[in-house]
Image (cartoon, rainbow, N blue to C red):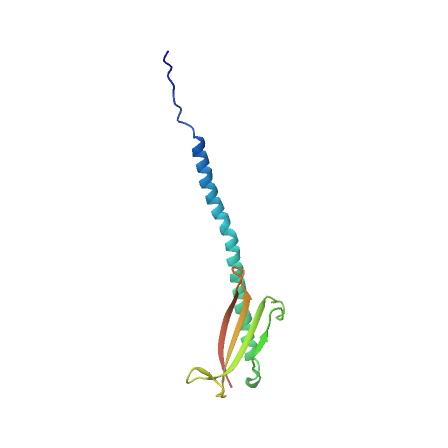
Length: 137
């Protein structure tokens, strides 16, 4: 007796299903790994924006003092109210506008440089931002 065996090609084999599950899971894992990185980038951007505001605030504060009273200062971590995760360093030097260099002689112009430091959430490194401005007598 000859028995005809029909092949039914309408379904998927076990190997095809396993390969498709593997490819799908690799894609899903890749997408899920991107979310924490996005949160860290957002956090770092917020900290950079806050540091910029702290630097600008310090420059405006220094400019509100009389010329003779503008001096260098250091505010270490945990000493700035409401911003304990930042450090602010203010350097004030006499400035020569003709040579565009710092000088020890008072020529009537001071350069105020404010550096704000913070620890990055992306890496375990200290980041900083610098603002500079000139003020005259």
